[in-house]
Length: 479
Image 1 (tube, helix red, strand yellow):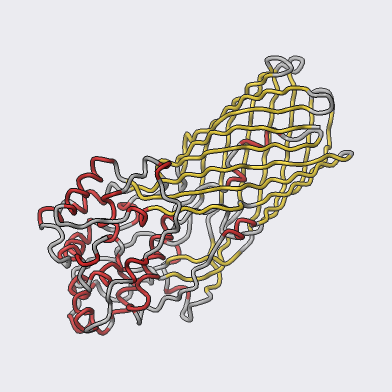
Image 2 (spheres, helix red, strand yellow; image 1 turned 90 degrees about the vertical axis):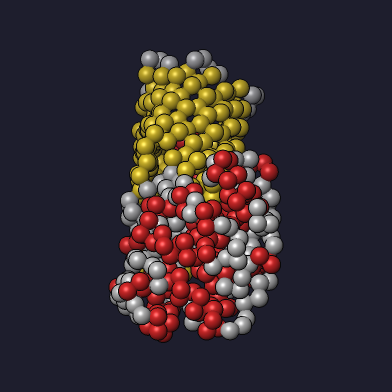
């Protein structure tokens, strides 16, 4: 990155984060996951930019952009959601009947998460402000080129990839079943534009001698996922029907892999907080999640198995409800609009109310608060065709629904919670419908059975969550 091409003003103008994204699209190669560098992502280069100097001149430069804002830049500030791996695979259909373990090696891909600039930001209403932001660069791009940046930015999407192993282990004693589900994962999220649009932006900036680091456009996390512990009881067991009921608990073991940013934000001291501001915006959008953000849960389930036509067809069914408890999370939240739109305000008023305007119109600061995620309902129905005593092929339907989030106490905020745009930072009710298929092979050994299988799922409909698909391989042993 050629820092010399930046003006001191840029570090402050980057509060909107959008221009920083423009500047980094040029080398993005998100469609080739194997080429990603797994190094930790940082904004160290930005910290090298000299930000000291005439504070009044710098603030004046920012105000020159703010005074063109028509309406708050953000429509919503909630993070795009994906499924916890504990609910991702139809692994509950391979319930251990005698004891043993199963390892699922999986890859999950969300081509387009529930995010788009038009849905999240008010680009059209504030085009003049974005143009002014671009013009603050030192002749980085021409006026003709800058006019094409916003249409390209509107095409931006977010992708997510997950890979790892999901372990299912358990044993049976009498009528009782004890099971453990946990995972090791690597997860990646990235901003994405197609190759044609990336090349257009790349040529635009390379013509002025600017180079950019694509590592700022993706983030990778790896470690332990959440853990589910199940205790069940067999209440009905005949030659053709089996019915199990039980309770389960969710342990947020993914938090072992979570590293909290120790920096603090101070909008009154932008010189020392700008890096944290930029990280907060980026991480809110593309920070992968290996679990459920640290929430304990407890629930119940019912599993049934029905054999038809002398075991030629087996119907598997599972329905569960898990209640997730409140836990602390960091969220970006704008203040409610109490000041008139900046375009109608005099310059001196803008300068004297700079922090309030930033928090109401431009930048959603991070707050630590209690989040109640709501309960999760998961229903799975599978029909398995047993070709012989070794092979079986199954097809099924998977329904997932999570209740709307609720926010409680805010820990780093002294004013009334009603002064914040809470609803714009909370996730609404999530619904996802999937179909899946799996093929299993059982090879009988002397005192145990070898289980081999493969399969996949595909989203057919979703609301407030991405359309993803999964493939997996399965190996295990039952005793």
